[in-house]
Amino acid sequence: MEENSNGVLRVKNLTKSFGTNVVLNNVSLNIEEGKTTVIIGPSGCGKTVLVKHLIALLRPNAGEVYFKNHRIDNLSENQLNNIRTHYGFLFQGGALFDSLNVTENIIFPIRQHCKITDWKDVEELVKSKLAMVGLDGFQQFYPSNLSGGQRKRVALARAIALNPEIILYDEPTTGLDPIRSDVINELVLKLQKELGVTSVVVTHDMTSAYKISDRIIMLHNGKIIADGDADHIRNHPHPVVQQFISGQVGEDDLAVLRMRGTISQTQFLPRDFE
Image (cartoon, rainbow, N blue to C red; front, side, top):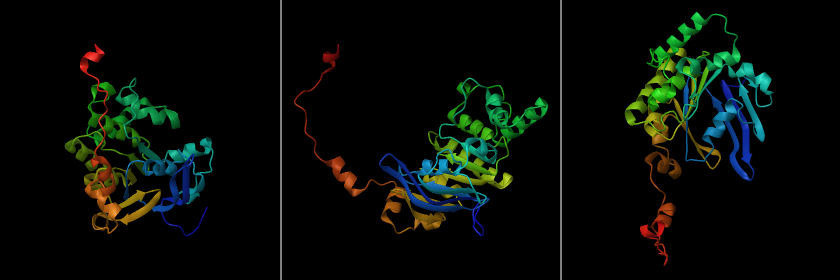
């Protein structure tokens, strides 16, 4: 344990490689309790890899990870079981179990970590969690009967089943239209306000990032290149930050895309496949 250190979650000099590919390069970060920290950056820059280290789903090649000043990256899976009850994780696709109904999906983490003795209490818990995401009454539905937005909301109800202190969101609005995306944004804000949770959100969605964040961090080439509130990011001088938040293709990429290609002398016609 380290003394006089800030942040409910901390990474210190974190490096992670997959083979020769260095995804995170000596990253240090403190996550403030009760706030929403949004992590942005281009695909493959290490956003999800960083978040998975916060819950020790991945282990670093070098560096340290702390939850409430307790180092967790060097703990065994058994030792991590209790630590992980303090977290909720909303996976990118929702990751619901297709063979389980909504109630069974929500109580899955409860079964994993608790011995259920009173099923009436469990029913009340499921009802209250679904009410928080606006889906009370869907207890017996299966994921195949739900829309994409509803599946995300059920997954969020499951993420808060154990009353976590921290919720980690991996691309929560991916695959949703703007209206359903904003429903998720409102739920992120609601849970932070009503439950007092600390939220860490990975997203490419800048509309969402600006709306829900207390703080935005941008990763690029394995390092943090920008860190501040929404206004700071909007006005950041770094050209890579401006290119990302405006969604513009870089000049080098444009040059490649606009190159005249050679046309093959061999062309296949529909009849060739008959």
